[in-house]
Amino acid sequence: MSVAGACETIARMAELEEFKPTAESQKRFDDLRLSCRVWAALSKSPETRSAGIQVTADGGDVLIRGSVGSSKALESIPRIAAAVEGVKSLRCEAGLGTDWYW
Image (cartoon, rainbow, N blue to C red):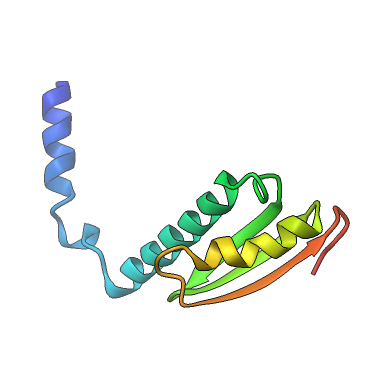
């Protein structure tokens, strides 16, 4: 099979019903996209880029967990995360220090 033929086959397969998004898959995608956007915003900030955090989102409700190295970073997380478009509510369960666990 040629490369062009393989590309055509994949493009046609993507049009099949089983590859179309469902309401559930679209919600999961939107939640993942929001959590990635929040994580990226925190990673770009010099105050929070070294934080060991995990970000999850559910319909605009964002949860941040993990640990940070300074109180300044801990104070900055809610401000930075809340500024991301799509965040409706924010819960920060991050703690100070490397041995902080929930």
